[in-house]
Length: 186
Image 1 (tube, rainbow, N blue to C red):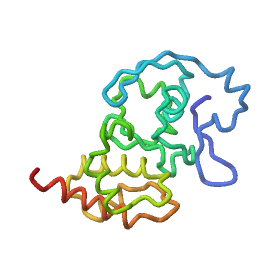
Image 2 (cartoon, rainbow, N blue to C red):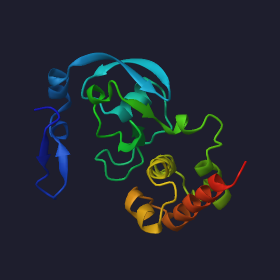
Image 3 (tube, helix red, strand yellow):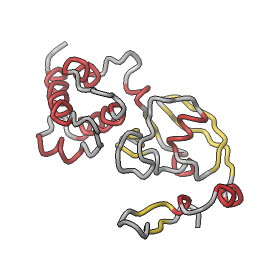
Image 4 (cartoon, helix red, strand yellow):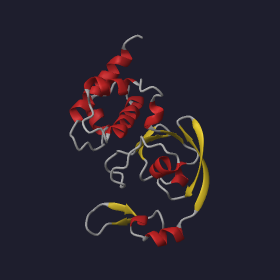
């Protein structure tokens, strides 16, 4: 049953069943695995429970703390990474499902923070508290890969991350600025 989905009785939210188990039962049900993951173009070895969310593999096992924990149920987007190029909530992705995929984290977006989105984020001063911004940047980068000249409607549809500070208008402006900077000849 580990990894199955159950409906939370108090809301319409669907939660993985491991939220309903006790820590002791998770230890009994868990299966350890050794895995090699392709992260930011490098092969990284890790040993963890097969159902450990990728978020915790990145943060706790590999020390890559740029990807943030927000809600743990895939709603907020603070944990967004690229999974084979697609923006993916890493808090919902078990380690066993990550094997063989190409994973990019905020640390791999640009080695020197020179990605056009990162520069635009700084120029427009998008971040307020900044907690959600790594996930926002990763979602925006995936959007630009799919739609190099996104419309406002495409931005709104792709940027489903939650920002408690309400910087959504600055996020949209930064995406447009990054697009403009990528269109200029170097």
